[in-house]
Image (cartoon, rainbow, N blue to C red):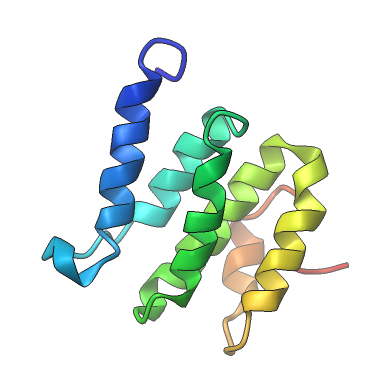
Length: 115
């Protein structure tokens, strides 16, 4: 899909990001995870979306936090040199008592917040 119709994926990203907002009238329960899958399909093409995913960690709904961590770890798993950068960004955003165990259980990229 990323090679055939990248603009469709970009529009999908826009809609998923919109679903985080109160103005959308809904709530994008799985939006972070879906964004992570789209961005990880071509991290260079969608690199502008990465900070927007990270910013969703600060949305008032705590329900998005684990999904944001999953999405960023998924992207980091595709670009080895981004793992440290994303890990640093995540640590700077962690100001609450999120359970790393849920994140680490779904993470196979080496970006689980340890080390």
